[in-house]
Image (cartoon, rainbow, N blue to C red; front, top):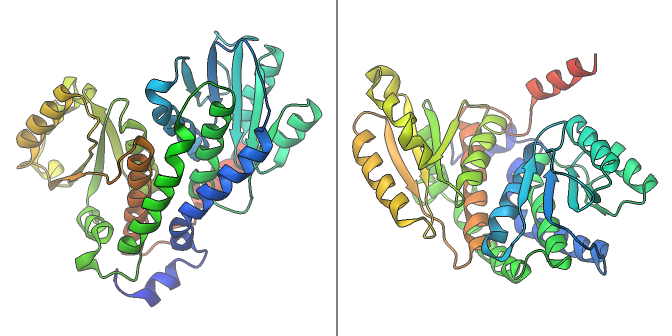
Length: 351
């Protein structure tokens, strides 16, 4: 089925595969938009940063925090709640990021940030967030509308990197973007639907995960946000249950679950997102953990990224995981774009 292009087109009528393929161009456009929007923007006396968002917007914040890494000497917090952390004040930079502009948790956090006199920037396509920001004279980075938010990760991530560097909060992030874009353009040709399953690593991994419960493992501060991204993409694109955890925390609790029911364990397919930046002790933990569980679960797969810089490796993991989730949707005979349960929940929340 994964090599049946007509079947893929029938299931993917709204073009999720095209959106994944065009992620590099999306990143380029996002950088151009952001640079024009924040050029010359100045804030002073910032002591911490809070990025407010849910779903793809929050993952964009998580990845930006990861890319910033050692070059950022301020605390960066990603807020997925209606309320802000109590430390937020007039020395906090609050970035309200909502693709639709109508995410109720982000709107509530925006109002609270205004009340606390925080320094603010909004990233959105429009909606109530843009209306509020324009009315309040808050700078807005307006990104293109019309995409599923999870497929707009370039629009959520790249403006954050441009903004933080323009404000002097991080250094060197923008230099990594061109390399990440080039890497994605190259690797998508190895992962696209036209590439046969026997030569397509994303199709091969989707095949392993089909009929199983994927458990995605990352490493704290290195691939943890990517594990969240992979899990969420399998939920939304593939309509497939999936779970995640991180090293070293999972070695202090979750590992004991692998002494459980053998029939349940054989339904679990473990995917470990690797990185050359892992702590040496974490590398040893991964090696030992894999040896302990490989014979009791369905399988253990390690995914190593390509790339020389942190952003290149991050975007490789994003692109590869997105393709895996889309191919798993095909195996499940699901439209990778449709999110009926989420839409139903949102409509009921309105009532």
